Structures are given as C-alpha cells and as structure tokens.
Image (cartoon, rainbow, N blue to C red; front, top):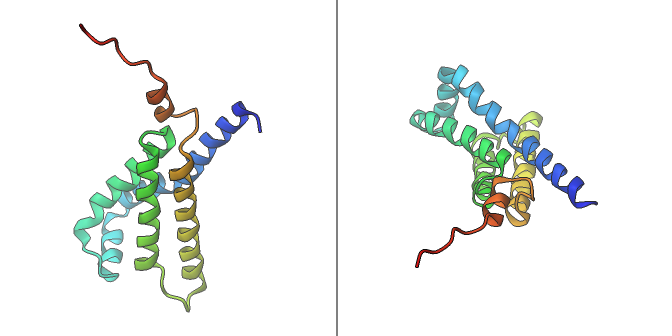
Length: 137
C-alpha cells in the first residue's frame, strides 16, 4: 500500500476506533442519572461517572488527532478489558457476550495501535519531525 494511502487509512482507523468513546461519553452526559444507577447496580461507585465521561471523551479525541497515541491506546486497551469484565459477564445473555467480545476486539485494536503508532498524519508524527530550536550559546 502506498505511504499516502496508508496514512489516510490510519487516520480513518483512529477515527473509527475512537468514535464509540467520544459518543459514549457524550451520551453518558445526557443520561447521567441512568448511567450512574447502572454503574452502582454493577457495584461501581457512582462517583466515577464524571471521571469516566472525561476519560472517554478526551481519550477518544486524543486518538483521533494522534496525540500521545501509544500511551492513550494502551490505557484504552486496559479500559476495554476492565469494562468488559465488570459490565459484560452475563454469559447467559447473548447480547452481553457479544458486547464482551466487542470490548475484547477493541482492546486488541488499541494494543496494536499502541505498538504501530498513529501513522504520519498525527500530532505525534508532527512532534517527532519538528526541528529542535537552536541552542543558545
């Protein structure tokens, strides 16, 4: 695949992987009371609602623009596995099993992103390729 095409595919991939987190965070704001009650029903402190919202929206946006991608992707991979183990372990419910597998697949995608990096069209690539300022004597 040509480098230019690969760069655009990497951007599209980052957007597709992250969109669920940005939207999920925004939806949680709209349904804060319901989300808090669901979290508490699953034995997760309701006080974690707003930190969760902040994490989902900010990490999604950071992946989209490709800033600190390897670190954020690693955190998101862990987050996907953690939320899978907390919220989607009702193995008798086919929908919950699918949600569990979705989270595991997303964790794999973020682990891969953490290894390969964001690609050339990212803030990370711009930071690395930016010339260093001249040193003063």
